[in-house]
Structure formats: C-alpha cells, structure tokens
Picture 1 (cartoon, one colour):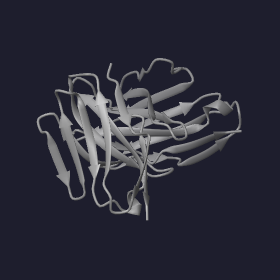
Picture 2 (cartoon, rainbow over the protein chains, first blue to last red):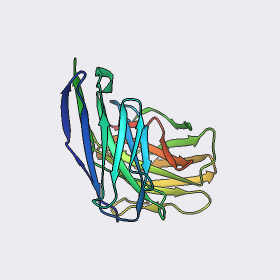
Picture 3 (cartoon, rainbow over the protein chains, first blue to last red):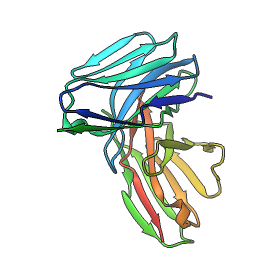
Picture 4 (cartoon, rainbow over the protein chains, first blue to last red):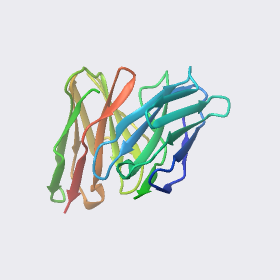
Length: 112
Length: 113
C-alpha cells in the first residue's frame, strides 16, 4: 500500500517568513495530493490540492509543488501569519482507491 | 466546499456501554465514507471504509465486532463503538469524497469513564 512520510514534525517561523513542509510517497500510481489544515479539536480543512498532471499550483499565499519522478510534494506558505498556526497534513490517493493516505502531520507555529 | 456533518461532537459514556456516532453528507451523496481515529498530536488513522448497501471494509487490526459500521443510505453512515472501554477514548472523525476531494465531519471526542 501507499506510505506517506512528512517532515518536519514541528516547525516554528517568525511572522512574515515562509514555511515549507515536505512529503514523500511510495506508490507511483498515486495521482492526487491534498493538503489539510487542522486546528486544535477541529476537523481537517482542505486548503489546496494538486493532481499528477501538473507540477505546481498556487492559491494566494499557499502553493504546492509536485515532483512525480522523485515522488515528493511540498507545501509552501509565504508571508506567514499567526492564524496559519495549526497542524498540516499531506495526503496521497491513487485512482484505484477511494481513501487517502495521510502523512504524520506538521505542527506549524507562527511567532508574532 | 461540500458539507459533512458529524454528531455528536462530544460524548462521555460509562465502560461497557455502546455509543453511536453519525456522519452525514448534507449536500451530496456518498456511496463511500471513511472512519478515522486520531490520537492526541497524531495523524489520522483509517479504521474502516463504509460502503452504502454492503459491508464495511476494516483496516488491519480494527475489530469489526467492536466498531460496527452501518451505511444504510447515500447520505448517512454510523459508527457504533460497542462495549466501550477507556482505551477507546479518542477523537473519531469521518470523511466523504465528492468532486475528487475529501471532506471531513467535525469529529467526535469520545471519553469512556
């Protein structure tokens, strides 16, 4: 099955700096890679996703890059704000499956 | 985005009793829903895949007789934790897919005393 690894497990940045979270996956058949933000005690919220037919996608301060050859994808948050503080999860899914395989999460802290 | 509603959000029960958690897709139909368990500061662990009109598919190590899943309609899946014990205390969360993306319920904080 799929195995998704995520790094780092914790990340602290100063407000205004950028944050980068990286994930790798093992199943070359995976073709959908979403990122979720989870605040304490709340549901994960989809913030951005990318499919394997593109290499980069951007939505305001958030961007995701995908390297299919190396089987890794990354989340980039620019101009971080305190409200970006949360746990971020990457995930992977391939077309033959319905379920997502999650990374272990990254706790991001943005220091004002 | 699509809306998945989960109830209750919190429940406290006594050891030995059963607890039912509901997961509803409010604005779309879901033939498949997923149930996860999340321990503090950890990732989401898939417990089972709920299939409308058929038996659920359980992940390895998850007791199907303890975690009963029923998916009787295209908008509702239920998870029943039977004969609950303190070690079942956790955050349970469901999800459903639509438009190629997964959407989560609010989660249920179960505490077994």
